[in-house]
Amino acid sequence: MELSVDLKRALCELFEIHLDERGVQRIVTPLEYPGSNDRVVLRVRPQADHWMVDENGEAALFARLNGGDTQSEAISRWADQCEPHLNVQYTEDETLCARVREPRLLAPTIFRVACAAQQLYALATSQLEREASDFKEQVAQVIKTVCEELKVSFKSQANLPISGDLQADYLIGDEAQPLIVIAAASVQRLLEAQMIHLEYRCLKKAGFVLAVVKSQQAVGTKQFHRANYYTAKTVQYHPSDFSNLLRQQLMH
Image 1 (cartoon, rainbow, N blue to C red):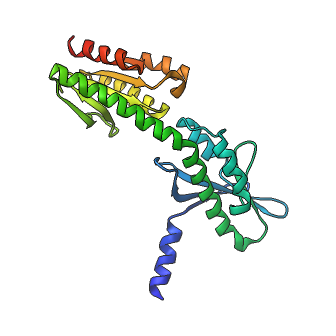
Image 2: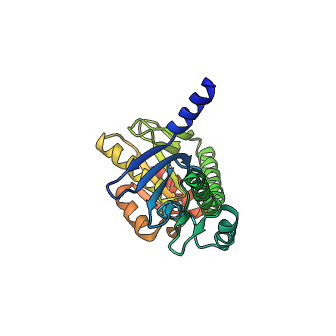
Image 3: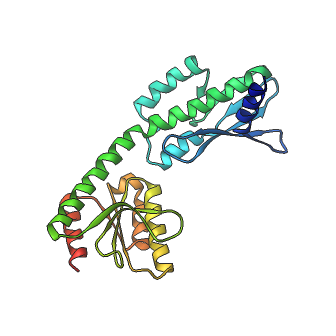
C-alpha cells in the first residue's frame, strides 16, 4: 500500500500545474517533443458547460521552427484519424484540442492531447530528420576526403572551449586556430553556429566558424543572409564548392 501511495505521488510530481487569474490551468507535462528538450505544455480552460484542453498550437509551431512540414498529405491523413481514434481535434489554425464535460475525464484527456502533440511533431519532422541525416553524411564525406588529401586531422562532434555546452560538427586542423564546421540542417543549428562565432569573438579565441546549410529554403532566406554577418562564413552546400572552400581555408 505504501508503495502505491509513493508511486502516485511520484507520478503527480512529474507534472507542473500553474493557475492564472482567469482560471486557466497551464500544465507542463513530462512528455517531450521527440528529439528536443521541449516539454509538451497544455492548457485547461473553463467554458460555460465544459473544459477545453489544448496545446495552444505549440506542436505545429515547434515543428515548423525546426523545418517540419505541417501541411503535408501525411499530416492531413493523420488529422483525419486523430478525432475518431484519440477524440482529439486538429483545427484549421493547427491546434490540437478536446472538449471535456466531466471532471473525471480531464486526466485521460490531458494524456491524449499530449500524446497527439508528440505524434504531430514527430510526423511533421520525420522527413526532415531523414533529409538532415543524409545532408550531414554528405558533408562528412567531403570533409573526410579533403582532410585525408591534405593530411589534416579532424574531430567530429567536438566539444568547444566556450560556455553553453555547444559542439562543432567538425573541428578541423590546429586546435589553437581551428576550422569549426557546423552542418546547419535546421534554423536552430544555424543560430547555434552564430552563438559559437560570437562566443569565440567575445573570448578573443582564434577560430573560423563555417556554417553550411542544405539550402536557403531549409533555414529561411532571411536567416541565411543574416548568418553571414554573425559567422565567419555561411554557405549553401554544393559538393565541389564546399570541397574547394575547405581546401582554401585549410591551405590559407
